[in-house]
Image (cartoon, rainbow, N blue to C red; front, side, top):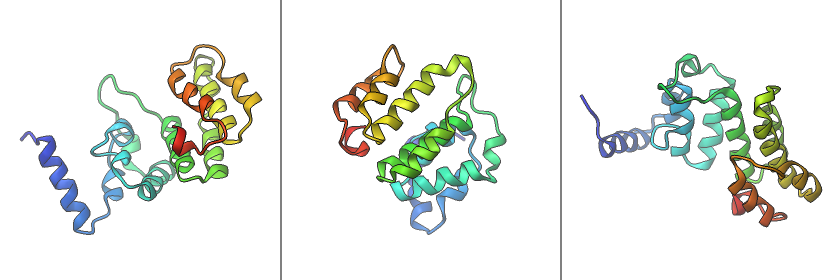
Length: 161
């Protein structure tokens, strides 16, 4: 049986209205669906519940974390940890956001672009223009976000991101 998007939205709305905790349902989702699906995953929740869902998924037990994501889709714990840091930054919980963002750094040589993006974002949150420019230099697949952050240094993350 195929479920249309409008039917899925109706099911989710009914679940929310019934008082069931949608976060419990999300713990069963594979990492990509949990992280990237705006209808089923954490982005579908209100900001306060987003933080709770992200924490629950990372800290576990989240059975979905052991599942495989759909073919061609990849999300790992670092990405979900990063999104928790972002969600906290959106709520102006800067110190906690920075702590989680630091945990999403990787040692892999092929991810230095990712690390520069994280470090530039942390420098933005710390309002450190020198460190921001150091880490935001060069090509980066998140260049458009870095340009917005550069233009908004000194402003809240939520306003600039």
